[in-house]
Image (cartoon, rainbow, N blue to C red; front, top):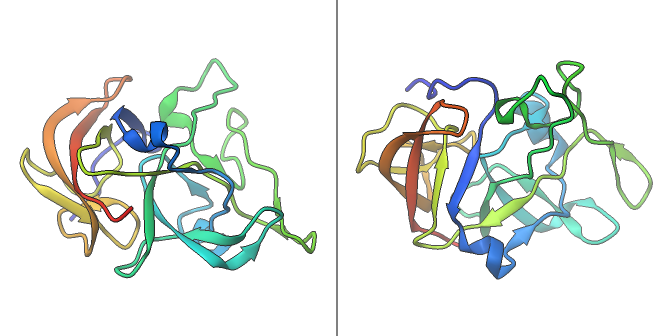
Length: 194
């Protein structure tokens, strides 16, 4: 099924996500460098990542990394990084976390250095844990679902009717728009592993 048509990069509007108030925010763990490269050198809002504690990158605060979710992932969250725009010519659709900026109007994150001071080409997003009943609006999904459809996570970390990772499931409640007028879907979380 084709990816939902959007302009620019994925957006999330957190209508009601309790993980933010409950402190279920992971903001100090890097994404596995191979995953960032496989996704085109950037991580955008609205994709789902899994935290793998104790494996991978060994940072100053903790050892672990974020990767695309699998059926046995212990902690999955949605990427909702604060949008930072440094040019009057950009909007929310132009924001993602880049290892290499595609234009002069977009910023990159500095290289991530592990304990051994080795630089890694990765980014550090803000990952929010979801709870049953959370509501958010996004334009970052696969296909064109109908109201009432149940979406799961696919192998690219996106919501999809044909997704195979069912640890987080959402139900489409409304077809709506993002703040910039792009088509989007409002969803409610009906199953969550975190």
